[in-house]
Length: 236
Ligand SMILES: [Zn+2]
Image 1 (spheres, helix red, strand yellow):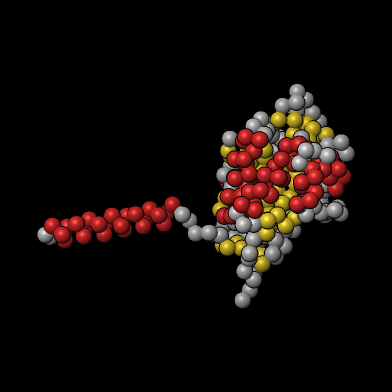
Image 2 (cartoon, rainbow, N blue to C red; image 1 turned 30 degrees about the horizontal axis):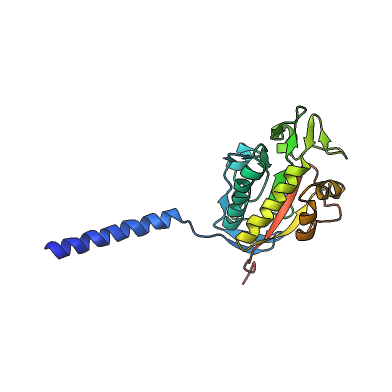
């Protein structure tokens, strides 16, 4: 090869390397199909099992593939946690079940089928007032069997409604910044007055659609959030 030929060869090799690394750096965006009650997902991504101020409810369940979401939902959830690091620096957040990598029915949930549903465990404070992760494990069906009383208490743990409200607000802001919205929030209706009584309460009441009636399972230990994104029809 003469000199210009070598230059061309090196340049094309460099371009090939660059485009290959660009392809690995940006995985394809997810695509949702159908609805949260009857749907599926393509290119679903797993939520990170841990971050500076959050953790998954169970590493076992995460390893079993139960914490996948639409890539935009993953970005919203992690953006919100990042924002909370400055507004609620001492709060430990825990998320719960989301869905399979390719969506579809994930028992025992009735929704969670197209990557747009996320369960979050309530942020709690222990007997000494410290924000701690709710003890979720195999003995209490990874947290879902925990029952809080009418005052938001379970053993030494008390629901931190201020931290919960801040989280919902952060999710709402993060969703809008990514061109999405929150379609539904489910929390035990008996707790809504407590939530609306926090500093973020009025803003939440105005901006988020809360389910007002009782859901098919009591949502005392976790709150469920459905995000709204454009999905393709399930068939066709
Ligand atoms: Zn749920």
